[in-house]
Length: 221
Image 1 (cartoon, rainbow, N blue to C red):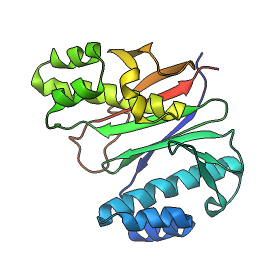
Image 2: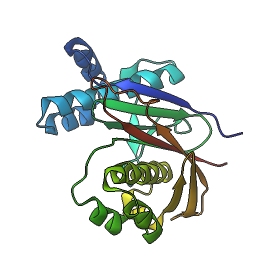
Image 3: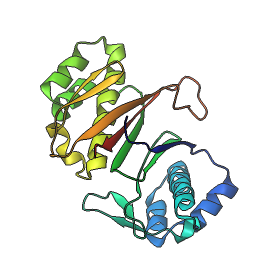
């Protein structure tokens, strides 16, 4: 039996009143990040994602969302100052977000909307291992984006869980088959289990034809 964790799917298309409430919860550095976004939609999505994260984490600590204080590792992985043993992670893409929380093991999550990618095979060849690239290139062009994002989300979730960052992406080699992800090579000596989260588990917020792909990595302890 795998380690249990909680997963929350969040719609980032919030109304102005909710956006104002969430913004009031943010720390000074989070507000600075909001202001650096030029697009109002990107500002709203960031506020909605961080507000939702604070709302869920506050329930575990039995406090107000504004009271939460975050610290960040070398590669930007956040942790709670007052409860560093409560593991969590956040990912968002195109008005959707995924939040994962685990009380007993390191965890990471990623989320992407499947979409056409310019020079997809060139990117796969640059960042992925040979076996991964070949599994994408062997597919018809219309199916390549889904396989590309399957690898990308699994790799990013894994590296976010380890806290090492995307600089190690080429050192992580995976084999992805229907319903199963195998880790063939890892950049660290810790062991993680990878699980894909596929549409329709991740519901789109507005457009019914969007396909989202996500992944969760959790440390085996």
